[in-house]
Image 1 (tube, rainbow, N blue to C red):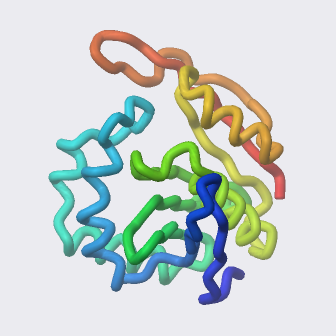
Image 2 (tube, one colour; image 1 turned 60 degrees about the vertical axis):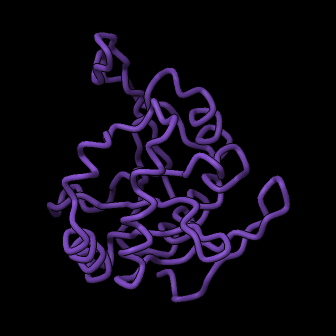
Image 3 (spheres, helix red, strand yellow; image 1 turned 45 degrees about the vertical axis):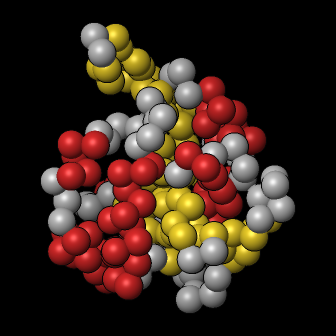
Length: 183
């Protein structure tokens, strides 16, 4: 399991980003960062309206939930006491699918294309490899999100399938590409 240790990564522009487990103490920073993460983020499934529905107590409750389940993980990437990105992973909630789970990731605009997403995913993979239950890490990514697909392929995720017309934005559809990595 991931310990309370922090993992430090150098971004492409030589900033030191720390990736660590999120704690309830991060709730206010996450609440402030969440709407900023949706700026110029056409590939995010959440909307500003979705985020505005979340209270600080909702975020604290979610963080507590992640901290109490050994097969769930929420990580934050932090730069100079500011959230740069967040990734969360949940495994299946039934015995037959508990060995696999999926993640979602958000990187704030000023940290995109600098390696923050890679740092978050690499840390998640490391955690999954050391988790006795997790064998497979899955994700869904919009078909036009070429940079994310490239990142996942570079980390050895493979395409398993496609959900046709799974996302509808501004009257236009996007397929979701299903990808996975056996750890």
